[in-house]
Image (spheres, rainbow, N blue to C red):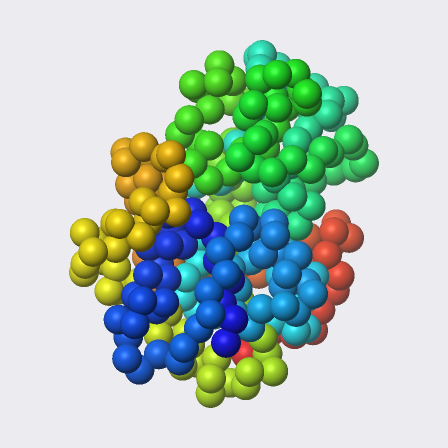
Length: 272
């Protein structure tokens, strides 16, 4: 089967054992590593059997993909940030060009929920947004991943913490992305993949030094401290299993997105 995930530390940490033969009972996978918006697009075209996707994107193809219970990026204090080259009032964002890391990202969804209505959103790869804001290409940008830790190095100012806004508005942790599987794989195989994904995460927790080399290989020029902070922030108890709190957060996000007309209505359950 094909398996798509990002080169970000939380994903390579999670999938290491699954794709390196450390789980003999796991089905074989051919892995594809791409940025999250590329993966969202591949899933929308049904090009991957199992794939890391934004929850925003999942709302557009929930009829074809179901969510696994393990592997999600969901928590508190880990949401996208809106940054700018100069201090500004959050209300001024409505009249500015804002960069987003992809149309189907949860970051874009949260921004649209925070600032309802039509506005100028500019799609820029997530790793270029900070330099685009710094250089004046756009007035503000929504940053994700390790950019949360490095934006001060670009002289940028935090204008809004969209994750904190979500948590204060709803009381839920912020759901960012999860692992989806094609529904036509069937309940038995999906459940097997889910259990092996959980086993892969537990293996990484038990063997962090073995996993570290694979994580660093794909983290490009990321400093070790940033890499470790990234994993600590995005890999947590919800990654093992969403539980009731996590599921409620995802359902709430999906419901608000549907009510706002951002994703289509769907009668399909999150899980198969």
